[in-house]
Image (cartoon, rainbow, N blue to C red; front, top):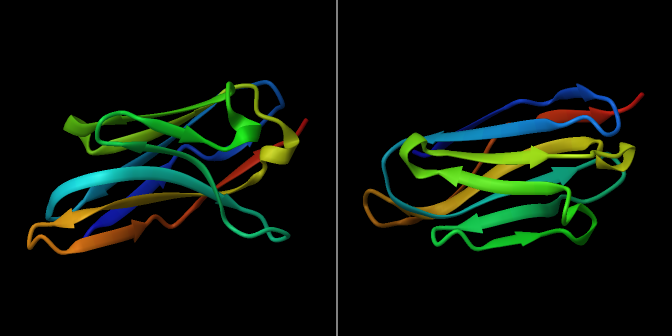
Length: 120
């Protein structure tokens, strides 16, 4: 069973930087994609950024140029560097990983979510 643990959320002032981390554990053959999503009480969960095994990235338009996703395969960890956050970036951020487990079955795992609040 693949498990994801997120960390790094909290309260940050507009313009300050914040980095989220997501570490996975469990028996996996490969993790093809890691991504960050976010959700507020007023909106559906939306994709913020994703990165595949080749390092190709995709970003939500409103965060492009401010956020950066990366992954450290040796540490089984993905990061979301949030630069110049805005109040509208306030949300619960969820990590997602997709791949094949050790039995070569596909999996899609979610973290528990970490609250990010951008406010002065």
